[in-house]
Image 1 (cartoon, rainbow, N blue to C red):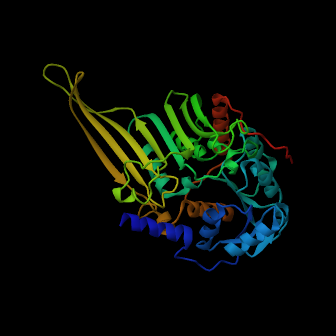
Image 2: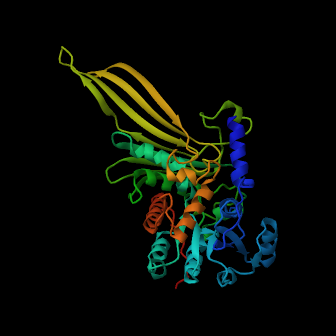
Image 3: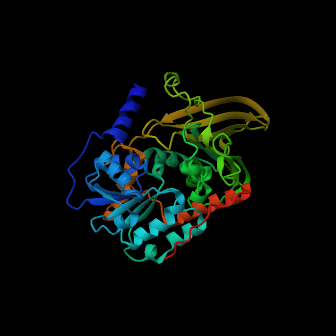
Amino acid sequence: MLLFDSILRVYNSVISPPITPRKRDDAIRIGLIGASNIAPFSVITPAKSHPDVIVAAVAARDIKRAEAYARRYGIPVAHSTYQALLEDPSIDAVYIALPNSHHYEWSLRSIQAGKHVLLEKPSCANATEAKKLFKHRLITAPNAPVLLEAFHYQFHPAWQTFLSQVHQSPGSIESVSSQFYLPRLALGKDDIRFKYSLAGGCLMDVATYCVSSVRQILGRQIRLTPVEVYYRPLSISRNSSAEEPQIDEGVTATFLTPDSKAVRIQGDLASAGGLSSFLPASWAKVLPTLRWPTSKAVFEPVLVESIAQEDGVPLQHLSKRSVTIWNHIFPFIYHRIDTSDQHTLLRGEEVIKSWNETSYQKAYNWPGGDRRAAVYKDWWSTYRCQLEEFINKIKGRQGSAVWIDGEESIAQMETIDRTYEKAGLEPRPSGDFEI
């Protein structure tokens, strides 16, 4: 049943939503800047189940590509340039899934044109661009268009349930970690992720999720100081490392918080793969190279009880908690939240007894009785959840209260830049566009 349920959720969320409501007269008309591979998952299919969203146009640098894309996905209008789409008066909002190097320019151009912007992560090529973007007068003006960096995983109830478990746990966090791997050969050698001029690299892709995750756990505005960073250069078999010496194909980084908490991330664009041990055995033959993205918080030991003894040496009951979420990036496929308490009975320095208690939780929707549970559906993808809140913000409606503001996006890029610098690499280059 586990595998069947996952397949059904994937079918409903990614291929064919079970609900396709009639579009409202005031639906937001979205234009796609770039005929990207991610848009069918992030916007086109999610929009089918949203009564307030119409994917109305697509623009590409090649009109033939735009027209072919429009035919394939049933988009009524194809534009030959990005600017032509911005000048289309029927378009209310845009989705930008261009190479990272183009995010700053086309976000500003879109805002200048009065369009709301759903911007793929990372928001910009570097922190300098992020500050200029999110603090720009066009963005900070009263009644400015909505600008949202698309860290889609944050909007799903699974991630928010995990955070609630973390933030409600007793004691202080001792350490946090996050990892995200793509299997080897998932990306071709000419993929934009391997181009420095396009602001590529592992830290700008899968590892940026890891940075975001640990910052969410510790606090959105937390400053992380990288103390050790190791990266694997671009594989010669994929592309000559001499041609792209600034590209990190894989990265492992350790950070410290201002109060010396340990933070560790691992990301890889070409992992050798291998199943995580928690997977059901029946999945092994189907997904032989899968390694779920995970995030984990480990807490300092907490004194549960101290029992006085006749000899004056108390019997102490200590508990050390860890909270782990498996597959928080794509939880609609499958996920699990593990809350584990390691108990120890101590008499002085002597361990009298130890045992472990673990509870398991899933959250495909908000808790029963929550007003949000009546709106959200169990089969919604992270992208559908994100689209819901993007439209709520545009419409001025009460949403789930999950949002990513400009300060968070700036802090995210600052952490990435510091990490590159610690690794001996350059932050990704800025463009020359200005308004």
